[in-house]
Length: 317
Ligand code: SER
Image (tube, rainbow, N blue to C red; front, side):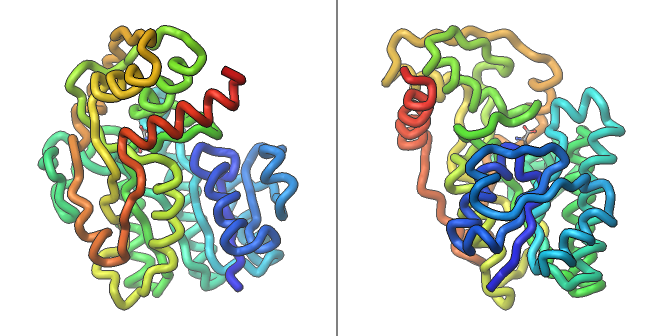
């Protein structure tokens, strides 16, 4: 039976991935860890929890040994817009946690998953149908950490045999934990505003296309890539994965089909706009589909129904 450590269990991905992993592998086999405790009740009550500063390798190693961990999900990162305000923090947290995890994985023979991102691309990348293997010259510190992380993952695999795998997540849309300071966050916040009956100020301009994915598909991707038959993997760090792409007008129109009174206005955030303009309009994820069967279930239509339904219940609307 696999024993898994999730670092960053309190974050946007971690809070949901921990619960999904526990439902697949059993609560006792998935250790939730974060720098800040307590975590949400569901996590606290369904399996082991540890406090861990991922920039401290000794702390990770101690937990890995104590629980006999054989796979690490490293979800520790500062998202793009926040990292841009404090680049050293973005680098230190992103790279610190990753290098520590890779070293602990090497010493303890663990597999390791670390998400990369659409942020690993930049303005000189072909932005329509972005290929799996292409130019990666991002101009954000977040992107720099993601490219370096991809390279390190492949390096640890070829040099030391560490089973490092990764996907390039697009903007992730979820309803449990809010993302913290990303460029794609608007596509989450817009649903909260619609359900609460508030006007929404969109930080990105009309026509800004970005790849997106609903969290249930992202959780499947994170689990399925780690379960994939290694002999079928031509790539490892990191696979393009996407489920949909839209601009602010399209998501607004989709929400208005269900909430006709909902109003969105534009209040541009120059930094986020600049970042979004340098990211793919849509990625080609054929390699993920062919090498390990990636197949998302949600598009803009059924995701919108689900988001509005779940958030309406959450806020009693
Ligand atoms: N969602 C992330 C961000 O916007 C991209 O991976 O920073």
